[in-house]
Image (cartoon, rainbow, N blue to C red; front, side, top):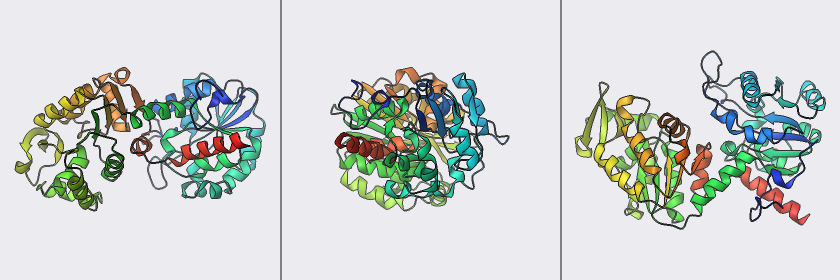
Length: 412
C-alpha cells in the first residue's frame, strides 16, 4: 500500500498496476451547454486531467452522463470528446453507443495510450434506476462491458451520491480504485468532516433548500458545527419557520419549488438548535432592479428577496473571519445580478480568512472564479450535491462501493 493510501479504507491508483491495462474510468463531464450544443464551462472536464494524464500508458475508456431525460442539455457526448481532446492534448475518440457490438469492438481495438469516450450513460434506461450495487452489477451495461477491462476507476466524486450502475455496479466485478480527483475530494472534505477545532462555521444557501436543510439536520445531529449561517432560499424557509411574513411573491416561490414541506422541518430544527442556526437580520429586495435593504418585519409582499442585507453580511463575516473551519455552499442570493452579489462576494472573501476553508456547489465556484479567490480556499469541491451530502456525514454509495471492494480484496 502506498504512503498516500496509508490509513485510507479505499484503494487509489497508486495501489495498482496501470501500464498496459484496459481501464474503465467513470468521470463526470456533465457541463452547462448552450442551445447550439457548445460547452459553456470546461471546469468539470479539466478537473479529471490529472487522472487521465496518469493513464497515458493504459488503454482508457471513459463513461459519463450529460443532463437528465427531458432536460434541454440531455444530449450526446460528442462535444465533450472534442473539448477533452483539446484539453488533454491527445485524441479522445468518441463512440456513439455504450455497449453495442460497435462499442465493444471499439474498446477491443484500443491501443496503449488511446482514450475512448462512450455515449451518455443516461441514454441507457438502467442508469437512472436506484438499485443496490449487487443489483446494478447484473445490469446489461456492467455485464457486457466488464469482461473487456482489467480495472475500474471512479474519478466522479460529484455523482457518487447516486447508486447507479456506472457508479457502483463495476465495483463488484472489477478491481476498483479511486481516481486522483476522487481521492483529492475525499481527503479535502475529510479534513472538514473530522475537524475538531472550533469555531466550525457552515454557510448554507443557494436554491436547493431541501438538500441544504437535510444537511443542516445531519450536521447538527453529529455536532459538526458551532454555527450554521443560513442564506438564499434556505434562509427564506427558516424565516417562514420563525413566523416571518416573507411576502406573497417569496411565499409563492417556496410553494412553486415544492419547499413548503421544509418549513415544519426548519421549525423543529430551530426549536432544537436555536443557539446554532443563524437567520439573516435583514435582506435585500429586488425593487425594479434596484437593491432595497429592509429588516425582516419590513419585507414587502410583491418584491422578491434577492440577497442578504448589509447588517447580516457584517455579522456573518465576523463569524467567518474567526472560524477554524468554514464550509461555504451556495450563493447568498441572485449573485448573477450585479446589485445582488454583495452578500456572496463579501462572505466568500471572509471565508478565505478561516484556518481551513471549503467551498462547493456550481454557482459558488462561479462566484469564486469571478473574484479570483480559488487559490485562497483550502479545498474547492466540484461535488455540488455530493459534497453537501458528504459534509453532512451521509455515506455516498460510490465511495462506499470502493471501500467495500478494498475490504473484500484485503481479505481475499
